[in-house]
Each structure stands twice: as structure tokens, then as C-alpha cells.
Figure 1 (cartoon, rainbow, N blue to C red):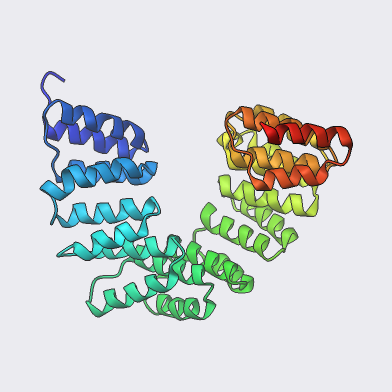
Figure 2 (cartoon, rainbow, N blue to C red):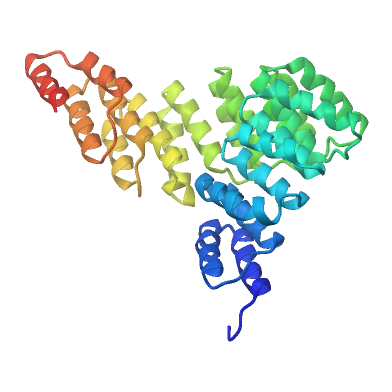
Length: 369
């Protein structure tokens, strides 16, 4: 552009965020400031949203201290964006501090705080905040209800969940896709799989989130056969699984040692973008290891575009489960060479499996490094 102003910069930053490129938005913002443009409240809200999406807590805190406190301390939209950023980054107490200092709050602010408490495992605090919200006659939207249902799930309070469910039916909100999916998740998490199945069946539209909640719920209860049946029903329903669906279904295969089902799911995964997802990769490795297919697990590991600590742990644990102590020790060395700390879990897993004198000598040398 021949000439740029705050509006054009903000438009570009917002567009990046809206299209899932929060990292590019965070790269662009410092350039904007360096060129002498002062961000307005819309710029700040977009950048805070990017921080939330990218879990860029340090960037968000810097923005909070350098810009928000000086320019937009009392702006309700910036305050709400700050609360959302902190809760999405897992800093619920920082979010509460911002929330408490806000002179005015809207539905988004209250909902972000309730959802943040729920996601951080503070279900009781979320419920108390919701009651305060109702007392102050703040408008409650669908996302507020979703946050409250999540709080019930984090507390595993099926009684409170049923009370809220009754209010949802009374207010004719049960057809909302997000609410319906969260209800399925809530009942599944609390052991009420019969209720969850009824809600899923009654939903006019069922997406991957709803089906995955059902599948993972069955997994949590140890009903692995039912989990795989739900996956088949989901596919017959024409719904495309997401990464969490594949991971949950593969977990059921691993527990059942259902190799053929696992291979079938692997074949589907290879035709989608899920094959590059690290969590799906870990689930595939675990499934093959539990089924005794060590070479297949190794091939999955080698084909993964990236590894994390969990990937290494799954491989090492799999080797020990299959009596391959030398391989487990080898991968422990490789893990350390890749810069990952060998924690107590990995050490105890390998040490327990190592029986012969040579391996004991090897691990003593390793520990001495």
C-alpha cells in the first residue's frame, strides 16, 4: 500500500486472526508500532484474541502492561478481550484480577470468566459467578450456558447438570448445537451414558464434537466396544471425525487389542490431515504397541513430522510392554539427545524392564552423565 494508517493495519491484523493466522498477526503488530502508529481499541482486541488463540501469554502480558493500562484501562471490549486471553492461557486468577477491576462488564466478560473457571477445574467458582450474573440481570447467551455445563462436568455434578438441563428445555435452547454437544459431554463424563445417548439421538444436527463426546464418554466408562460402535454410527451419519475422535477411537482399539479396527482407522487417518497430528500419532503408536505390532508403531513414529515428550514416552513404554528393554533404553538415549529431560516416569519404566547385567551397566553410565 502506498499509504498506511491505523485502520489499514488493524484490518490486516484482524483478517489474520479471523482466518486462524494469529502468529502472523502477532508478527505484524510490533511492526505497526515501530512505524509510529498508535493502536486503537479494535487493534488491541484483535491482538489479544491472537494471543488467546496462540497461547502467547508473555506477549499478552506485555500488551496489557504497555498499552492497555495506559490507553484503554476502562474500555469494556478491551477488558473482555483481556479476560478471554488470560483464561485461554490458563491464567484464571489474572483474568479474575482484570474482571474485578472493570467498572463495567457485559455478557462476553461474564461468560469468559465463567468458562475460564470451568476449563481450569474451578467448577464451584464458575457456578457462584453465574449466580451473581443472574442477580445482576445480565443477559445470558448460549455460550454462558455452555460454560456453566462445562463447570458441572468439571465438578462431575450430574444433579446440578440435570437442573440446568431442565432450564435449557424450559427455555427451548436444547436444539442449539453447542449446548447439545456439551450436554452429551456432561452426561458422558458423569457416567450417565444413557442420557447422553438419548440427547445425541434427539439432536437435529450432530457434529463431530457431539459424537466425540459420546465416544470419549464410553471410553472413560470402559465401554470400548460401544465407543467403536458410536464411531461407525458417526460415519454412517456422514459426519467427518476430528483429531479427538480418531484419538478416542484408537484408545478403545488399544484397550480391546482390536488390531483390525485400529488398522481400519489408521487407513482413514492417512487420507486426512489428521495423520500429521501429534496426538493422533501417539494414539496410533499406543494401539500398535498394545497389539504387539512394534514395527508398525515404529513406522508411525518415524513418519510423524514432529515428536513431543508424550510421543517418546509412548514409544519407550510400548517397548517395555513388549519385552524389548534394549530398544527402550536406546530410545531413552535418543530422547535425551533430542533435548528432552528423562523424567522419573521414563527412568522407572526402563529400569523396571532391564534385567540383565549389561543393561544395568548401561543405565548406570546413562545416569552418571
